[in-house]
Amino acid sequence: AQSVTQLDSQVPVFEEAPVELRCNYSSSVSVYLFWYVQYPNQGLQLLLKYLSGSTLVESINGFEAEFNKSQTSFHLRKPSVHISDTAEYFCAVRRYNFNKFYFGSGTKLNVKP
Amino acid sequence: EAGVTQFPSHSVIEKGQTVTLRCDPISGHDNLYWYRRVMGKEIKFLLHFVKESKQDESGMPNNRFLAERTGGTYSTLKVQPAELEDSGVYFCASSQGTARQWETQYFGPGTRLLVL
Image (cartoon, rainbow over all chains, first blue to last red; front, side, top):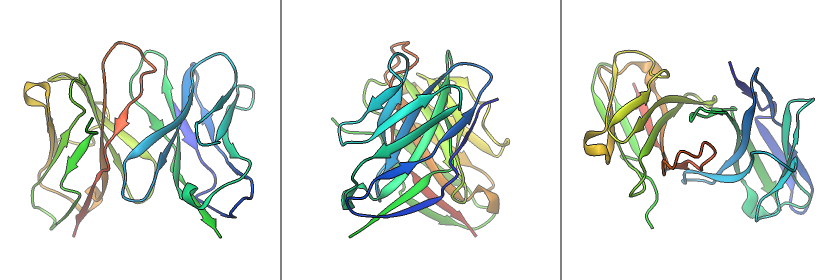
């Protein structure tokens, strides 16, 4: 079975500070890895994904995540956050050959001025 | 292009009543998924349609939940009778269905259900 752990339910941070949102997964088979973001009153939006190849993946708004197979982690980082990054972030995995996601419990990022 | 839409956005009902949630996927998307998030916990898979057929319903909690997708377009999820533990946010997602396993699932804003 697959499971995803997001240890931090809330992360408060000041604007322009760096941030890391942690995600660990457990799976006995190979998986694809994703980060989704949910802004207030909106649906989940895909932020970035790891399928294969380079273990470092980037989003268009400055976030990046690195797949670490030995530590089964896919932490999300941004070197300098903005107020507009305030949202809830979900880590998710999908098994090869399966369509359904397994999500973590979410991390609320609160960027303060 | 319109995204995935869900109706209603909020629903408050009493235990024992019936509620029907609706999802309109992105036009042309064959795959439709239902997920649920209970009490701020993880988002859990409920079921997956390919067109009008149920591909995987392993996440449906019990037989009080009935999902349909008539004609392979919009889908409804009916809860009858509703129980307190059914409260949560119900998300719908759709994807194109090109057989690429990594294709993006597009999520709707969710329906917030509160059972009193």
